[in-house]
Image 1 (cartoon, rainbow, N blue to C red):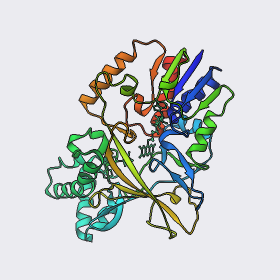
Image 2: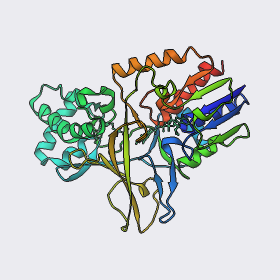
Image 3: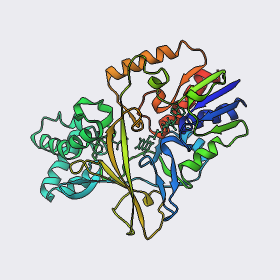
Length: 369
Ligand code: FAD
Ligand code: UDP
C-alpha cells in the first residue's frame, strides 16, 4: 500500500508511525510549512537558549495512560503542572477561578461566605462551568457568578472568539470552570509534562522510521503521484476548494519579544481578559525551567482567520458550522481511500492527547481492521 499523510503535525505524525510500525507500510508525509510538528512546533532561540512555543503555549496533560505511554516511547518528560494567572482589576490572581482566587480578591469575611456557600451547594472539589454558576438562585452566588463572568470570561471570550460566552459552544468556556478547590493547577489530569527536548524533537522521533519519508515545503496541491490512501490533516473546506462555502476558524498573531531581564511574570501564562487587545502573555522559559539572564515572551492577539493572511488555529463549534462540515465529510466519503484527520480535518477543538487518542481509534476502526 502506498500511503500519503498530508500534514506533519501531531495527528499526521502519529498516524504515519502506526502505519509504518504496525502495518510495516511505506508512508510519505508532506507539510507545506518548512518544519514538522504543526502547531506544537517549538525551537531553541539561538541567543538565549530558551525553547519557544512558536504557535502558543503548549502544556501536555492527559488521563489516558495509553496515550501517555505511547508518547513516552518518543520522549522523556519534564514533569510540570501548568499554573496560570489572570489579571483582575490589576491584581495577578489564580485561574481557573478557585477558592484561592476568592481569598486573593475579596475580604476575609466575604471570601469565607462565598466559600461556604459554594461548598454547601455544589461540594468540595467540584468544577462548575461559568454558564452553570450564573443559573444559581442564591443572591451571594449570583453576585459571585456575575463578578467572575464579567472579570474572567466576558471580555476574554469577546477577544478570542469575537462572540459572547453564551454565543459559543458551552464546552469552550467549560474548559476553564470555576473550581471549588485549593488546587491551583490549570489541569488536574494524572499525567502532565513537557517533552524534555521539546515537542519538535518528540515529533521527529515519532517520524523517525525507515518506512517514513518526510517532505517539507510541499503543498498537497503540488503532488501528482497516485496513492492508495490519502490521510489529510489540513482543512477539509480547502481540500474541496470551498465548493460548499468556507468553514470559519479563529486565528492568532504572536508578538514574540526577547527582554533584557531574567523574568517577566510569575508563571508561564498570564491571562488578560479586561485590558489590552491581547488575551494572554506566555513566558517560555518556565515550560522547561530554562535559565538565562534574558527572557522570551509572546503576546497573543486573536484574529479572524482570513485566507492567505493568517493560519487556522481554532475550529468554531456551532450547529451551522457542523452542518457545513458534515456536507464536506459526506463528499469525502465518495472517494475510497480518502480520510480526514486531526484538528482541522475533523474540525474539532482537540487537545494534544485527544488528537492522539482519535488517531488510535481511527487506525483501529478504519485501517487495521
Ligand atoms: P496541526 O498541528 O494543525 O497540523 C496540521 C498540519 O498540516 C500543519 O503542519 C499544516 O501545515 C499541514 N497542512 C495543512 N494543509 C496542508 C496542505 N494542503 N498541504 C501540506 N500540508 C498541509 N493542546 C494541549 O493538549 N495542551 C495545550 O496547552 C495546548 N495549547 C494550545 C495552544 C494554542 C494557541 C493552540 C492553537 C492549540 C493548543 N493545543 C493544546 C492543541 C494542539 O495544538 C493540537 O491538539 C495539535 O497541534 C493538533 O495537531 P494536528 O496534527 O491535528 O494539527
Ligand atoms: N477563557 C476566558 N478567560 C480566561 C481563560 C479562558 O474567558 O481567563 C475562556 C475563553 O472563551 C477561552 C476558553 O475559556 O477561549 C478556553 O480557554 P483555554 O485556556 O482552554 O484556551 P486555549 O488554551 O485552548 O486557547
